[in-house]
Image (cartoon, rainbow, N blue to C red; front, side, top):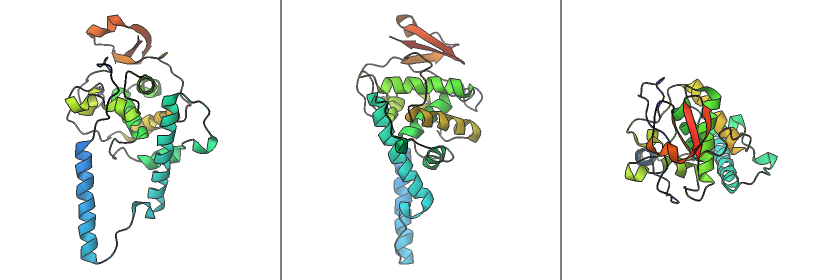
Length: 234
């Protein structure tokens, strides 16, 4: 849901999907924007008669590429349940900031997918509320009934317009307007990827806002009440 502290009305919750190993949704608009940007750079390069700089030519871009590679490796270990993480693989705060410094990049990497889910679902509930949302995303990615990647979980149902996390396909911009709240969400996501985040939901796979009474809630075991959300597992 997009919490009522934002300009958007309160929306939905993570509901039980039809069980499947999903295909991660594609941010079609972000992809088109990226293609247009590449074509513009190519055109300017030809006009100037010089070669365009590569993304890794700047230290900031190189740091972002390196940190993103770490995040993908950490995601793989996290989903497989491997707890022995080498120190050199841990994602630092600076590394996480390099990946998505201001909440404007496309939602297409593990850190950003986790951080945006935490932000849009619980940005008015502080760190503990965000942690609960991140726990659910991770628990789903580790469960064979759900997509086996963090972005796959967050975007599940997007291809059919029936999203598990409604903010993903509600037609509104997913870019960030509250940088301090997003910095906290990004750090929660970083800690989760580093295997440094406790599961405060006790294995929950589903949640809904406290004001809601979804039909499916009676079929599951309630595991936690955190902020404005109730959490459940089978």
